[in-house]
Image 1 (cartoon, one colour):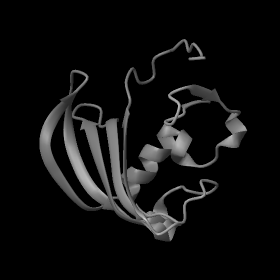
Image 2: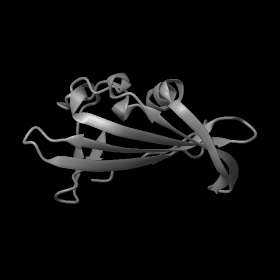
Image 3: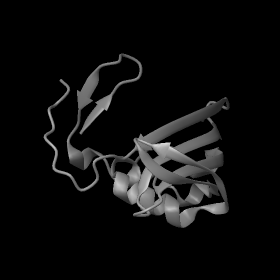
Image 4: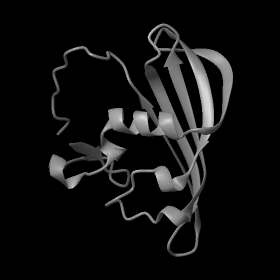
Length: 131
């Protein structure tokens, strides 16, 4: 697994057994979020990478997040919003965005977000290490 260090901008290589849970397994992450959404609303349809999608938004319970081994106390998270863009024809998730607010162990506040775009689903790929 290659992870880009946000502080240095450099890629770092880790063994796959160093990562547990759904955070580094997109399929499991999407399934967990899709099944755990609450207060779901449908927003305006959108196009992601040329694919017509339904835009679905909801909230997540922090206790449902796969944070084991991530050194993040679940009770420090609040206001977790998830957006899903679902293919109108296949109903596969093409994009997922998470935004959350939380409290740092030091007592400060944090706001974070991440977007995961899935493309070329079920297509063979050749991966070149970024390092």
